Length: 376
Image 1 (tube, rainbow, N blue to C red):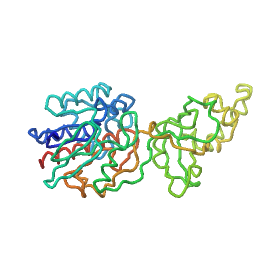
Image 2 (cartoon, rainbow, N blue to C red):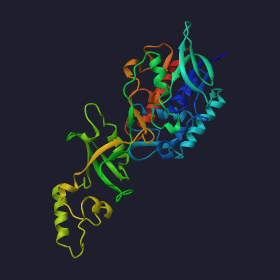
Image 3 (cartoon, rainbow, N blue to C red):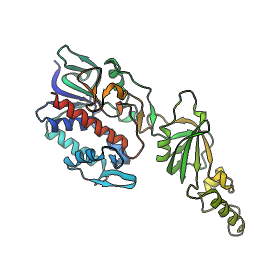
Image 4 (cartoon, rainbow, N blue to C red):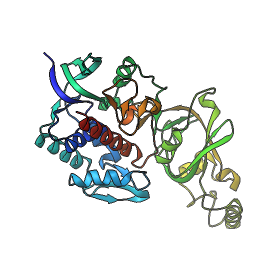
């Protein structure tokens, strides 16, 4: 016999938890359950912001809504660099602890080890959630299963299959906010870091630029600036070889200024014997890419050819998913299947690093939760 509930949230990640809490705040009398395939909810949330939970950004359009939601739960924020907001304690586990306490104290059922595999719609308008773990008969159902990024946290794209079965389309999904594998030998610079302005080029045409800390790995390039560039690597009509990354290692100096600096150094070879670039950059980077000497143009345009984007296990989010055109973005209800809602990474949205993707999870979850509860 299926369990009965007013609202069934499929997925115990950030958007699903936010939806359940928002639904309860909207309608305390509504019966709500969260079904989660893993043995605990919020696993991926614990890893966000390197365990610090960068949960929103001052530049997010609806940042005040997110902060208000967190403050209502007793979570105070602290603003960090580049507008990033973290819980005041700097601990993602504290955020999850508050969420779990709210869910338990407000009788929101958490059903773990439940893998939803199918949805069926009854003539009465109710939705039956079928899965390995039983059946749940719900008045409203929310798909908040996440995308494909981070399979180690339970994200495997299950929600896309159920969305397709309900009549939705799914745009191509690819890893986003990930490191970039590049051609060449990086063994000598593995682990080195350098400040740089990096630019992504496609067939020689500049697409976008980021400034930050460039990290060298044994396979290529990493760091937040590279993560943000990776969002724009698309293989429609081209291959990875068509993409290059240019690194300006002296972005705060003009080419002329850098030329003058190099000329001064050449005049003082007795002070800087054999290595013109000493103190300008890590020695291993200078030796690997420049042999200890270079002109200003080369130093401001170090080129790398992409060979791949690191896959789902490394990516922070998913690009692609259910088109926003198929969803009422004010309520997050499907325009195709009445009573079915979407939230979080399952929807076709991906933002840059810095709290934008988590903010999207809270925002869409809150909208869905409120709309479902108001219509119970």
